[in-house]
Length: 423
Image (cartoon, rainbow, N blue to C red; front, top):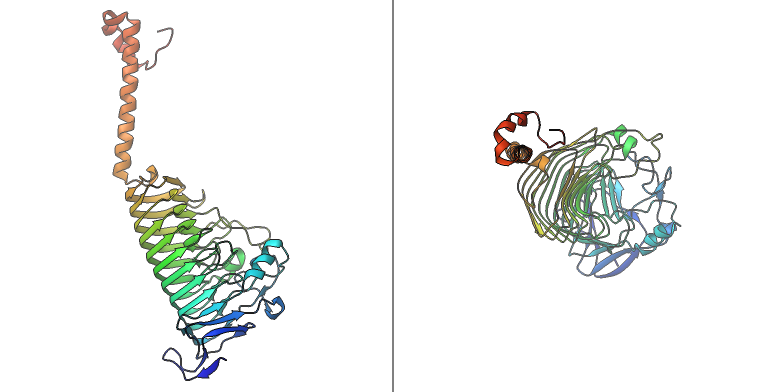
């Protein structure tokens, strides 16, 4: 059985140790100055009895459960609110959410309350997840909400590819975050940075900020390796993603928003990324996400998506290198450098400003440096002018009876560029 042990260097208080073996548990809250240690071979598995999972109020920045309008939500399997100095760590033991029954209920429509997270910390400080596997969450797997100083290091998240909404780690209105040495294979975004949903998120205005994501391996056939949004109505800023490998994902790096979200996504730096067999390498799209049903009528709030930098992105086999789609009311601002995806499709761009250099396949014309755009324009203009002149000269020569009439008809060229029947 699990037992209490002396504190570890990660915490100031007690430690609950789960030894090797499989242990079933109903959801429970952790406490401050506490660590939960899972030894090698240990599995802490959630009971899949819906009645044992508590029903709790919606989060303030959402105003409703995520899946059902004007409804509450389930609490998490593990976590707590208002905590300090908490660690979940050990010898790579497993916390298993036993999600199959939840996924089935979601698919067949018998679920009426939004499913619970596997781990959720609310308004908490100094949270550490280390050397632990999190599997089969009913809903988003790890959800730090309005937390400060959240660290996930040497963590794995694993769920089937067809498991609905099983995001890996979702920092939500959370600041000072480090996600490092992270392995993820799941049914939704491996990292999704959020900050509230439409009018509820804007009313609170709590951003996610100062986030570092380093050395991650992600495989999500249905979603992205790392995404921002789509619930980002409190704003997202100061995010760095580096040394990432995205394999078999629907999108590599993605920002998703909509005309209802508002707020901003700014100062985002993505560098040193490898993409392999993804559908879309880089996607920044302001046409994604359903409106919050409590925001009636749906309000127009244009997000500001700018100061986005991607550099040293390499790989192969993307069906589309980049999909960049802003709104007419708010164009995307982006810089791309040294993007090279062998054997990949092209680019799609609309309502986007910025520059792309050293990119293969070649980027959209609107992202070429100004000098390159001018050269392309001049070549096109000059070639068109020469073609028109040649056509005009041919007409003059033809109607003038060949060489005999060419001198007499040349002055008409300034007024007549195409042949007409009356000339």
